Length: 627
Image (cartoon, rainbow, N blue to C red; front, side):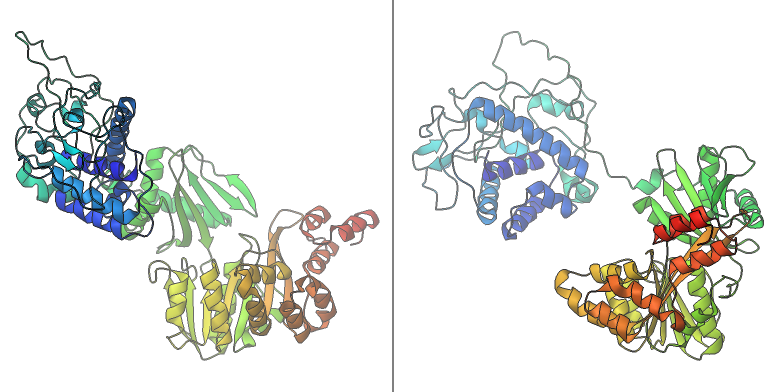
């Protein structure tokens, strides 16, 4: 079946089964003809909202069945591939010709680019009676009365008659249950519920359907290029046999699209604010950093880096759904209906703020709460060296806080911004997802924006921030190419940009920023980063040897002319040696910090060896007892 046959058959079936109106089909065909690359009519109809994907699937299934019958009958021509515009033109011509009122037409030679003559049973020219089983009645296309033979379509070898005794016999297609109606027995088209978008346009064509009655099987034959399908009436008989019962349906009827929100378990129902707040308060009291609520499991928390189960019964699906409804706002609920997971901050008077993630898995719904401190910690409270305060003295450039997930990057970011807020008089704009620490303006003016509540994306918020007279821009996380590009641009245009990345050390941070760009831009980005970068702080949170708390281990890089040259010349692997030379400037490697913690007995040697960059040094330390 070539493209013209496929498009024409699709159009007939879509009209005959009331999936599309004539106006909608014309629009779809016109769109197909304007495209540079061929796209199927069904895909275009779904993209325009004329059909649902379920309706398209049913229509394509029916089209495949008809094509299979056509293949067994040996029909089809041997033309080569056609352009989208030509297919669209011929499809529209055939559909409008077949949909015209039935009337005898004189034979005529078609113009160039229109309908071609059909092949006869033996591959010769089509003549009278060559394609009788391949025609479709006018009523199937127009739905305006009983079946009537379509007009003959003329060709250079003669007219193709709608009746033929030489057409190959076609096996009847079982009538689906949804098509069973009195109209099916009389030859009228089967009734199919229209798509909601088509209901007003088709209201005049639908009359109330009488109760279903047994129907005779339909005989549907495929078209070669032009004539539609025809119902072949049963031969006359003095004692017509009783109509056989309809077989079991092989395809479901097109269903009216119902929004997922209408039947979603979280759409409406009871909540349990008191129960949820009791669990959150207990988690905060225990000093946990995270709380997990999952169907079929007891609530458990992350305490000093390890998961600990609370003394409670496993959560049922109903209990978990109540907790989910408790924390969701209407906007967050609608976002969850579309995405099946959502990030937000849950805050209630008396229990504090919690960065929350709601997701769905095979068991049901799950909630994870990151417990946020009630006040912004200081750099000293976080265990960071005093030299880190140097980051707050820069007036422009790029400062990055890096490390693995759960190492305290957000707390360090908030501590730096809070220090600037107390010591400088400037305008600070933060872009976060979500807002964790709520900051009040002290010496600075602070505007905090949350994605997607206050802006659709980090990139859009950053573009807007550049027009809002900022001095300092804090970005919760540089996630993609566009955000990183805008952050570097802002740092080069006289702003101080502070952000985070998920990298293990300073060298991998530089490589990550460069590698996210296409190769043709990387040389330019190296030059920009070498000049705009001010410093990188990489930090780990490590469980102490006695298991009673966690301590911070950090790596510090301050940009110098030597390090800038290494970045510009794509020799980032030599940055480590420059950091060793720059210890007097406050730089330190992660291995140096780990050695200090091992020497003081704060962490174990085994833990330090697992996190070290140069594991050989710690292996030798294990033999001598001194790192």
